[in-house]
Amino acid sequence: KAGVTQTPRYLIKTRGQQVTLSCSPISGHRSVSWYQQTPGQGLQFLFEYFSETQRNKGNFPGRFSGRQFSNSRSEMNVSTLELGDSALYLCASSAAPGANYGYTFGSGTRLTVV
Amino acid sequence: GDSVTQMEGPVTLSEEAFLTINCTYTATGYPSLFWYVQYPGEGLQLLLKATKADDKGSNKGFEATYRKETTSFHLEKGSVQVSDSAVYFCALGTSGGSYIPTFGRGTSLIVHP
Image 1 (cartoon, helix red, strand yellow):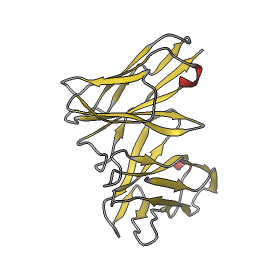
Image 2 (tube, rainbow over the protein chains, first blue to last red):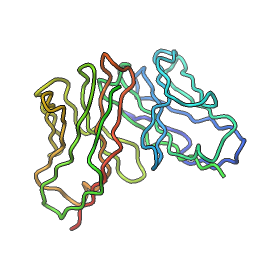
Image 3 (cartoon, rainbow over the protein chains, first blue to last red):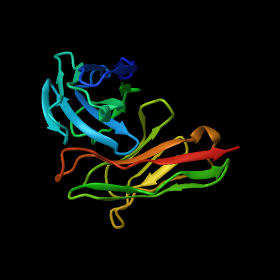
Image 4 (cartoon, helix red, strand yellow):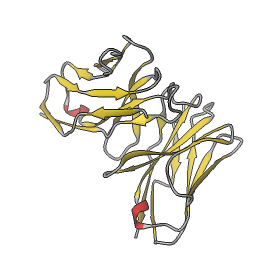
């Protein structure tokens, strides 16, 4: 079965712009989580969605937002981009929330802010 | 809160050597434990998991045992290959004390022919 699909794979944006990243989970998975990965901070949890509702949110500013659609696809948006937002953004899907089932990750979107 | 501590890398080994990557955790509940692997340019892949104390997870020659008494989940492999070169992450699922999974910082493994 198809894995987790993230688009686009690479993005270059200018400071102050906004960006939207997309994630299609594994068919049948209703839980989608987003992570930011950087060399300095490692993997940091952004938010988790289940059945179109945000269940948990990490410690990120309000410039980071997300949503989930009725088909479980999810998007995350970052407004007013800063240089420090450059990172690999990973989406992970799971059969149920809470991650005790384990995640399936996408290949990520590499965002570079210049 | 919950936390995961992994040994610092990189771990550098020759092919066919024995591998151990240490992972210890603190958790207020009884979370599932995981090892994920990330190959260059890719996302993380679930390698193995254990859901309760004394469970052993295994996959592709890798093993880890959920040790509640030592709060550890060390990853082992008897004979590594060059293709095992990657970054390995230890992770906690969610527990009674946290609804957000916790990942370690990752340990880079480099295997030389």
